[in-house]
Length: 151
Image (cartoon, helix red, strand yellow):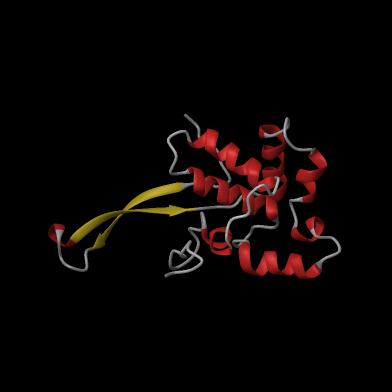
């Protein structure tokens, strides 16, 4: 079954020495490499999957930060500097990545991906900054925390 999403996932098994010498000194670990779709390909995918929910023009505008915030360079700059992963270009990538990550723990991932994506796109829910920055980010050297505060 071909599960296509924003990322092309290439998974390979690697052997890595266990720091504590357990398991015969080796531990099998899964490594994932993620590649972000080009903005036009992502927009085409979203238009197809969500044609009943969003206008084509809204999707096109969300491909790039500058076109989404045409008269607000501060908002565009903050989006790019704080929340977009490398090679992501606008809110469309952000919402897609966050919806994929959040839905990944659900039993029916595709159903919940679509539900989460719709509420993010419509601004019915706006997650905390750490979630927007870190959810679905496999490119970081250290996995970012998704909590905004600790008590």
